[in-house]
Length: 44
Image 1 (cartoon, rainbow, N blue to C red):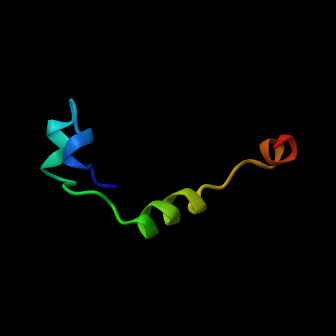
Image 2 (cartoon, helix red, strand yellow):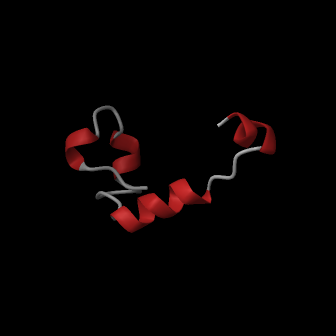
């Protein structure tokens, strides 16, 4: 995932590798790819 220039703060090292904000579709794909353990799903 990229970084927006305004939110970089102390992330100078990663700006060279991941410049620019990630598209909304990429962010959604990352969140939806997370698989919670069954025990956690039962609580939520």
